Amino acid sequence: MHAMAGALLRVLALSLLFAAPTFGQEAEPPSPVSHEDASRGSDSPELTGYDIYQRVLENRHQTFFQKQRLTSGDAGGSAAVTELWTRWKDGHDANGQTKRGVLSKTLAKYTAPSRVRGAGYLVVQKEDGPDDQFVYFPSARRVRRVSLSEAIMGTDYSVEDIIPRELATSEYERIADEVLDGVPCFVVDVIPKAEAGSQYAKLRSWVEKSHHVTIRTDYWDLDDQEIKRFTAPAAAIEEVEGVWLIREGTMANLVEDSSTRLEVLEMEPNAKIRDSHFSTRSLESKGR
Image (cartoon, rainbow, N blue to C red):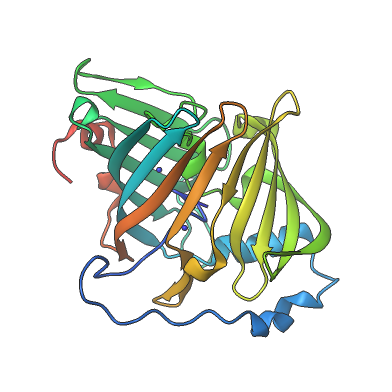
């Protein structure tokens, strides 16, 4: 899942990405996650923060298409549901080189609720210079540039939270390992570079050692205030076509006392996606 924390994910990143080609239907049971195999990372004092995060980001498909549901609630008991689909493509070739300096491309479109259906985001992450970031609203009938800090409508995720993070956009510092809910974890501070245009001064990630999957990330804003926390149950880690992913996660807004649960409803790993699928024309299109 890392991961639209990342994801969507990547995250969401993030890191928020979960996959099952027939999710929601009859499917083969997922491979069980065993944390007994944490030995391949637990006694690795030579690994730097960069090394660890590189393993996190290498654990992903070259492309994917997924449908997501975000359920938000606050202390007052109100709730809202937002649904969207996300298309993502890695900009690196088999030799790790980028084409025209593009690190990755993401396009996401809302499908519910009806008041935002058809709206969407397009983000092209670059090696050098500012990223291309656009938003489209059918009511306005125009595409405009957008900041990564803009919130996903009605949720506690921002655009930045759900776009898979790129290794070159940050610096990394390994701090003391921890056991989180019985799971051995690397702990890495991620410091976004100034040119990345991040809304965050720092992220601290707990990386599950067996499969290099992030199961918690804390976020500090540019005033050095801790404002968000993403958590995902280690039991939700599953293997899909050689990649270990998270099927769900929750982003808590520590300032507003609200939270949003992200679930991936459908996933198509290594989907046939062309560069032409990422354009302002695609952003305005009504179809997939």
